[in-house]
Image (cartoon, rainbow, N blue to C red):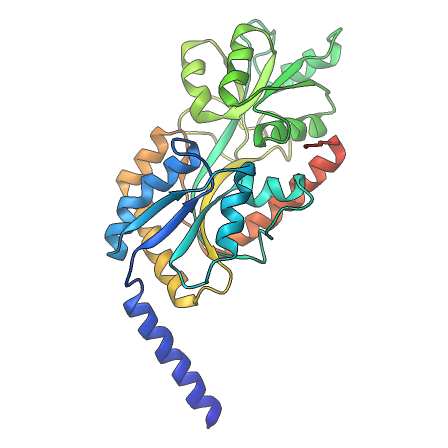
Length: 318
């Protein structure tokens, strides 16, 4: 009898919380500077979330240490649903396997709400390179007198690790040349200073369209709407080459289920709206409504994947 009364009390409390949450503004921490891809994703869904939740969402940029500073701050906040984090593949799948003393656990310290968007990577080369497919690139790399050079946004960056994964799966070996960001790395390939790069579609697309870069393969399971004529890695004969960048909304672990359910329902509705689907598509990404369990599983899968890549490639960061 007492257990029944307790269960009923919890159910009534949860229902009441669901009905009244949120009753004050919500702070959404973006652990990167304004204007970057993660910040743009947050601001893309901000108006819809504000309308759906009938509360103001305040974007709070807390950059530093590869996103770990802002992430760690949110992990330590009260789990009441009023401080949230825009997590990413960098903060929740890459940084935890690169840095020994990262101040949060990407699984234990957070409660996922939903993915926001996913971002495919594309393998691009300088147009002078005699390769018009991933298979031809592999052949060229194997017979080259000197190893081909692979530009990246920096050692340990997501596109560096995707490049290392490609090498592991194909048996080729490139000389990795790190730059200070995606744009300088792309310019290095355009100028011929480097031979190739694996980059997200959005920044690479203008240079692919203009012919300054040649696209060979996409890293997602299906072709990109922005590059429908470019085959996937699997179609190109590179099994296991799937990799995506992503952003997701998460809360501190222990946030009431009712609050998480409310957030998920509103965010999923926003992400399924035609306007948001089209806006993300124009940015080179894909709207990605999901369940919390799907987010958790992706984090776990990618942590294991990138840990293997980092260990086998011997990637070291200071």
